[in-house]
Picture 1 (cartoon, rainbow, N blue to C red):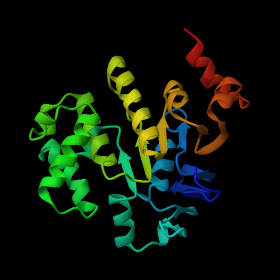
Picture 2: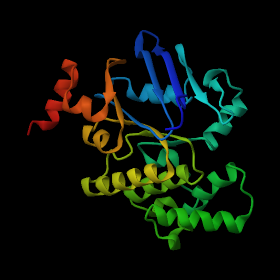
Picture 3: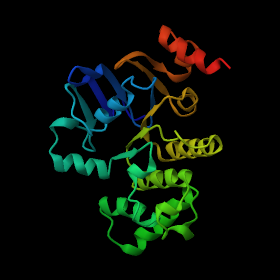
Length: 259
């Protein structure tokens, strides 16, 4: 972590969908190089919170602030659209649960990665292609397949390609929405090891949504437990999972330990 100033700050954050509460009164901070896991059952508000933190949705209450390169904490909702779009292409990454939602399926694997570099200002075709090939190798995709469409890849390879597309530009902050859900257990394990290694190597700040407490324990420094749109427990990951205080968290942990 760098200094005391957070990279991302949420204050009194809430989102309502008519009479339905998406999330309510969420406060959190995230520093550079820190991984925060948001856990809870389906419908707890995890994905809504992730959408608000990434600027994909505007909050009904409260605000999300991001510390720009100049050190100023700026309210995402008040940023000009052009500035917010630039952040999405440079400072932010977003890894979707379904790789198809984060890839251009009719564009080659190398093109998917290279597009992110072009969005960050790179213009030399040969250098872009070489860097894309290098990053494909880092996520364990054979660079010889860089001209193939993602449609020719397995689910696990598509997810690795989506990760390469997001991380190749060295963003400061990455949002991940259930990145290993729906994959075979053996594929999940390899992908988690890859994510952990890249997060540590690149010094990324990450907000990861997961229903899997094992994923949270493996990747996260801190954890938020959500229920019915509210944060009911928060703290260091091992502390919360080894000694949960809220009855709901105790039930979540017990459900994992019960055969």
